[in-house]
Image (cartoon, each protein chain N blue to C red):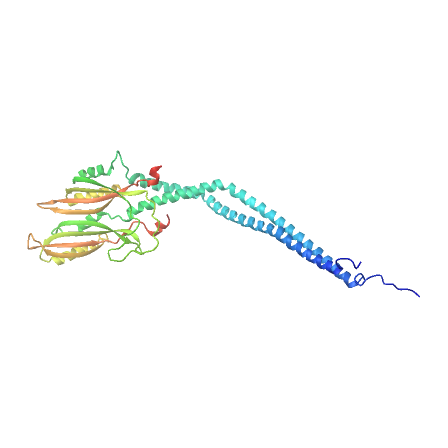
Length: 209
Length: 215
């Protein structure tokens, strides 16, 4: 009769399913550790590559710095030059050619009308599309003397002639007729000119500063 | 064997927890900082590359900009050198020019009065003649002032034609010269002679700003 003695405890008894679980766990752990090593290595090498690319970008940037400075200086100089030209435009933008206006008036006035006074004045006003820019507005008045007979028609003719002067004299309107205090058979008339406000500098020019 | 502190299954659980710990710690203290450094390097490299591309575009245009600068400079030089009037021995030569041209055209100048420099206005007046208020809101920054308007009043007498010719010649010689006000009145008993007074202006160099003056 053979004697069977079991020297293993329950825990120690080899269980085939335990071995499989253990093997799987060890395999799983090895995969995780391998994956981790790969991941860290990849991160490391990618960092190396990024740092190398950064160093290369810096070198490239440094190499073009001198030429970039030249280009920036040129841009600045061109802008300064343009600003000078724009500033000079502020003179011509508000300008009226008084000699041409005097000529147009002399052409429009017939010889039998005597001018006694001519005045041109200007005022600082708001102008531009949005009415938010400084502008100069010219206003002019001429006063003359002529015979009482047909004075209104003659003044109207003069005004029509002046209005035909290609806008050189702005909008010409009658200013009134009165009896000449020095000679009751004569009449004193007044004609007004109004001009559109002329903007010193336009908004786009100002924005570009 | 039953005296062992940990059983085999507990060891496995502990090993599993240890492994997870190693993974988490490795990620937190090794992989994550590496990734962060890489992201920062990539971002910086992208910024530098963008700046380089921008710079390169400008560098490629250097020749064209040189040509443009030459053209603008020539234009500025032509305008400012000829038409921005500079003082000679403390006075502007325009005054002499006015006298000379007046003599040439037969206009008698009784006086030239220097009114001084005026700045080109930067902002509109608060109210316009029609009663509309100037719009509120952001006022654009004042533009640079390199040139001021030197103003002078001229009084004298002459015929209508002589005044016209005097002003025409002054306007012709300097396209930036401008008559801003003019008054012509008939003189009693002298139909050919009128009392004339006009204010005119032309560009001059602006005074340097106070900070520049200190230097």
